Amino acid sequence: MMVKERQDITGLNCIKGASGEVIEDDKGIKDSWKEYMEKLMNKENKWDHKLSAEVKEGPADFIRMDEVRAVLKKMKRHKAPGLSGLVTEMIQATGDIGTQWILDLCIGIVKEGCIPEDWKSVVVLPIYKSKGGPMKCGSYGGIKLLEHAMKVVERIFGSRLR
Image (tube, rainbow, N blue to C red; front, side):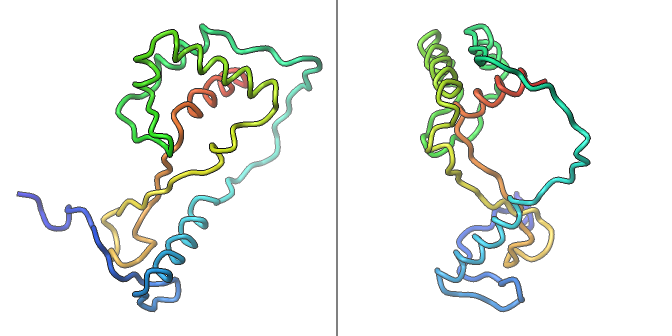
């Protein structure tokens, strides 16, 4: 038997706003969540600005197939998808076709100098932390459902930066 306090919170019809007032209308609830999540997800990390790097001149080095394979192999499985519904297991299941698709995507990003437009949108889900009242936004943390193809590309670029 599941303990009551460990059960998922579902179907809240009201929430407490930032000032403590109870909000019951759908628009007000959505606005409260939006305000809270934007504040939560856009916190600036402290940085001492003591980082330096040499400027690299000339054309960018292209991503290699072995880099894509290595990153795909290390990706965690059974993670929630982003807006497209594409998960790492799908890319891995296609073998060389999926690996080539990611490679082409990386090469396109390097050539164009920008990421795909649809990667700029993200789904944020509130997760109850079991601390505080379930009616308060502050009792929730947020998780971002990111595109798995974006995670692969980020890890390739991240490993190159390191």
